[in-house]
Amino acid sequence: MTDRVTFRGVSKSYDGHQVVAPLDLSIAAGEFVVLLGPSGSGKTTLLNMIGGFATPSAGRVLIDGEDVTDLPPARRPTATVFQDYALFPHMSLAANVAFGLRMKGMAKAERLARAAAMLDLVGLAGFGGRGVHQLSGGQRQRVALARAMAVEPKVLLLDEPLGALDLALRRQMQEELVRLQKRSGATFVHVTHDQEEAMSIADRIVVVNQGRIEDMGPPDRVYLKPATLFAATFMGESNIIAGRVARVNGQEFLVETALGPVALRGAAVPDDAIHLVLRPEQLQLTPPTDGIALGRARVEELSFQGTHCRCHCRMEGLDLILRAPVAAGLRAGVEVNLYAARGDVVVLDG
Image (cartoon, rainbow, N blue to C red; front, side):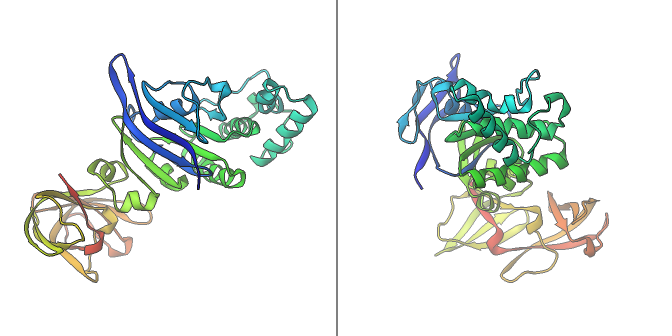
């Protein structure tokens, strides 16, 4: 795939404070990329530098190989959907969707026909004559998407567009976004701090922290094999166990932890001080094939989560989180043996 968006040595500072450290990033044509990170991480600044709402302090931004660093938003092949939708309350839905086309000088009949097609694309066929006040939050979001897509941008930028929706509607709109992106073939760059949202919609997640890229890759890889401790803790819950490499024998190494020695193996032997990372669902109550016995733990408290029970466990001075099958029938106060598959353990330096 060819690169649609390219950052080359891009950084951004405000009043001497660096919010984006120098970085390189490429986004392919037709890719759905999610910039994920906490508030203040720099993800929205990255989005704004693509759209022209912020100018890099250093470096260049390219779209389809063309340097757009100094171009204003109106001259870039991008469109942006904001969290507040920014619809015009005095206009009909058709006029809202056609607004960008009118600014481009498209004839009235043609732009209204395209507006109708865009409303149909987002599931609002026949709504063109309605007013904004007649819509639900989810419908307003769809109109904002239709308006952005109407101008056929090469890159659609989405700045936390689902943040104001309730949970059920947010999940529905996540599915709508994926459907719309696949049908249109456009490149989507979506900003959020919601890990579940990122995993459900992205082709690739870029985890941002303090203006730096901590990790990036397909959602399953970033979740199951995070590259850094920050990515491991921000992308859902993790059990982090500090350790120190005690002995190395080829690709096998022994790690001393608060739980006792843990034997692991890998193509690259880590540094001396390390952390072992296990997701709560990777802790098991019965020994798996090629498993590791972690030890005996006491269930301190638990809560029913529908598909599983979320258990706080205490062992050897460590607090661990276990997602146990409901059928296991665990309750507070019981003791269990915990295991993990050797291949599930992620070893991170530091």
